[in-house]
Image (cartoon, rainbow, N blue to C red; front, side, top):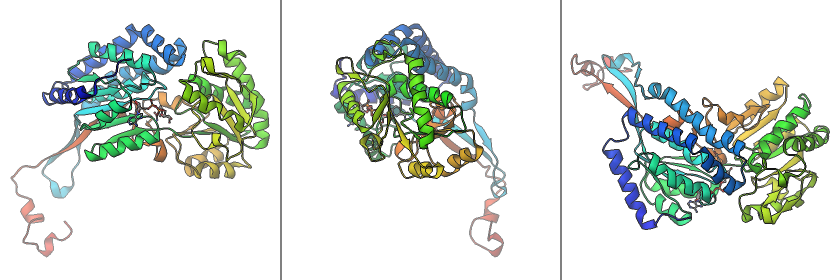
Length: 458
Ligand code: NAD
């Protein structure tokens, strides 16, 4: 992997700013053309992207299409279908005291924006924000994750030849390169990754008063009660947890339930794992691998925190950890303190719904919370009493495929949200425009001195 020379970074950013200042990125036609070219690239070079994702994460081709390539194509289609409306100037009503006058809100691009991406969905998370940035008319620098080197190299090789290289640049690198980027002034920084680096990004952004979006992670809980068909709940939990080998920011991190529910659920989770992935997961091409040795060692360290009902085996040579369900996990265990981000699903016993709600609200606000209950009173309590980036009933992960639903965290799970129209808004400034004729002169009689009793309360 060849990293971008650090001394080139200021020049790259200056070039993008020059392009933006020249107005290159503003015309709707330019934006549409870039988005269309990106769409074509994803479709034409799909096999290359699949191969890179396989090299980085052992990702199956179908999963790469569903969760990365196809997802991006759908986001682009949505943006192209709605861009005209998003760009429209919005007329607003004005208070009587201001009239006669016209008020409107005009979306304008922010300028030069930086997108920093993580390794777990290294294509989708690098390019999904870029769709919004281009739709909104910005220049953009993309910093893919060095921990998914094949995908980073492919993005870096293909994008500049596909998109307008005056306006879109890829900087390859790790901490030193990202640090050099963060020393530059941007008009927005969009970071996806962990909260520790999120804080570094926010600090650097503060120096230039740059707004940030932080898409972070955390421990997303799933709560299950006996009002739902537990076999179906188990299947969906297994699907949401073990896709991409558990390395999904919105994967259910752990399951909460009463002893009676968990006793019935545990074997059903094992059945669902066999149904979806078979018994020899190491040989199954639908099941990927852990990204690297450091993550592998961290995850293997959690296996002693409970008893494996299913899975528990691993192979360092192939960075394989079988889909694992742990029971008998204490609330204080390390696996319950840190985001797992791997194929280990602890089942944690609660005495009742109140206990589950207390457990979740006593911790950092998660990126997602999942509730499997057909009891409307139970659902209402989760909706009213807990806070999370998203709350989904009956299905994990899928909320991020709905362009009308904001995708983002709250508190420790992040700030800001995107997808669909919000991706456009994140990278736009909503400029207030007011136009008041100089005649008739209504202001002298209402708000200007000399103040008289008649002007009170205008
Ligand atoms: P990562 O290690 O790839 O880091 C993300 C980016 O930060 C990379 O581009 C990396 O080069 C850069 N970086 C790392 N250290 C840095 C430093 N000291 N200074 C400046 N830049 C630095 O990915 P990660 O953080 O391990 O990703 C996993 C985390 O991301 C998990 O917590 C997961 O939940 C979260 N995540 C969130 C979302 C979301 O949409 N909210 C999506 C995916 C992952």
